[in-house]
Image (cartoon, rainbow, N blue to C red; front, top):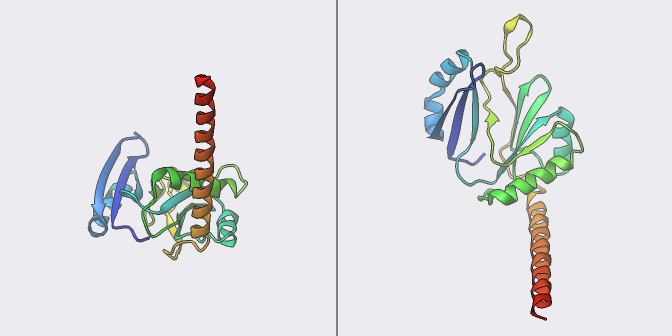
Length: 191
C-alpha cells in the first residue's frame, strides 16, 4: 500500500486491554511469530499506517459494496474479509500524504455513495490484520474465523485524482462563502 511505518494494536477481546506498537514494515514482518502467539491467546490484531498517508479505510462492507466502489473507479488497494461476507477496504486516494480532514471527508462521501447502513468511513482507524483470527466472531465449535486478504492491488484508485480535486473545490467554495458572510457581518457592525 506504499506505507513504510505502521501502528499495530493488540486488543484483548475479553478484557479490552490494548497494546500499541509503532513499527517499520520489516519490524512487523519480524514480529509475526509473536503476533500469532498473542492472537492465539485471544488478542485481535489491528493495523493502520503510521503518520500521514493517502489511504482511507471503509468498514462494514458487503461484497456488493466493494463491487460498487470498483464500478465507481475506487478500486481498493486492499480488501480484507474480516468475517463471513464482511469486508474492510483500504482505498488509496493518493501516493502522497493527505491532510486528515481531507481524508476524513473523502471517506465519508465514499461511504455515503454506497447508500447502505452499516458501512462506515474511518480516516484514522485500524483495520483488521489478515492472517490472524477475528476474536469477536465465533463459529460453531468455538472457532474464530481467519481474517483473509480478498484483494490486493496496492494502487491509487483511478477516480481518486478527480474526486480529491472536486472535494478541494467544494471546500474552497465553503470557505469563500464563510469569509463573505463574515465581511458582510463586519460591515453591518461598522454602520
